[in-house]
Amino acid sequence: MTAQTMSNAGDPAPPETVRESRKRSNRTGYRYFLRRLFRRILPRIGAVIVVLFLIGAVFAPLLTPYDPIVPDYEAVRQPPSSAHWMGTDDLGRDLYTRILYGGRISIFAAFIPLLISSSIGVTLGLIAGTVRGPVETIIMRVMDALLSIPSILLMIVIAGLLGPNLINALIAIGIVGVARYARIVYAETLSVAEREYVLATRALGKSTAGILFQEILPNVTAPIIVIASLSIGGIILAEATLSFLGLGIQPPTPSWGSMVATGNRYLQLAPWMSLAPGAAIFLMVMAVNFLGDGVRDALDPYLSGKM
Image (cartoon, rainbow, N blue to C red):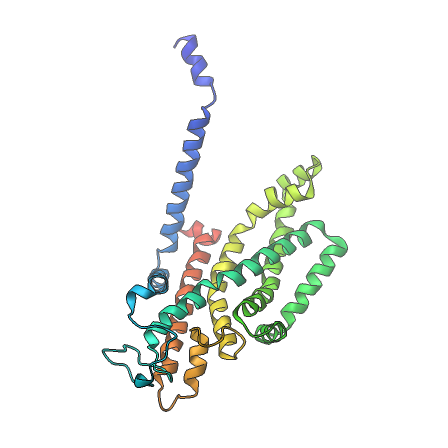
């Protein structure tokens, strides 16, 4: 072996090679995660149902010829038929159409409370677990107070104070979810903050913000993802509940919860008015929970070791 060959063998890998290696590692990690996520039948079923609802919500104008808002007084409270697959409501509007359009609100609006609760809750949990002292005490006592109040009662109070509309309902749902994120991230932060590499970076004089977002946050993302995936179904159900109580989306805009509330008045005369949107809520919440369970199992290190 020549000196040149020995020199080349000892040289570090070029940046391009390192980047390609990282990309391959990331792709392998994604494939491994997806394989673990869908290794059981229930997450697969959940994924199929969620995708079907998403397709229906996005392509609703192409999947139905009816308008979700304009009444048709010649078709009031008609039972399911070939013309109206799920029947019509008290104003003659096609229920299948309103469920498709209502899915846009009930599904996509779930991400607003998720963003509110996760961003605020994660930040408060990180601060409380890192700063400690009086700041920790104040933050966690406030979170404990929020957790001590029944969620639905707190949502109703906040939405009632803010006013009955969709945005205020989503804000109320997001505020209620803050304490859950803060409590779990706080516990994870306490554990990670005592690890040797974090103590070493603190001893080297790294700022608190740097430790928070560069050392601790990447190591608590797994439980955050699990909480988020498991909470989407609850958010959809909470939005439907507030709409059912008249504190969410307002008529005539379709929403699954408000459709159930309207159909409740005609439960004996036209039961399909409540059954159709109620079934949509049930299927969507069940599917999202199936997916959430799959994400939790895929990210569980104990289950990973058993594979």
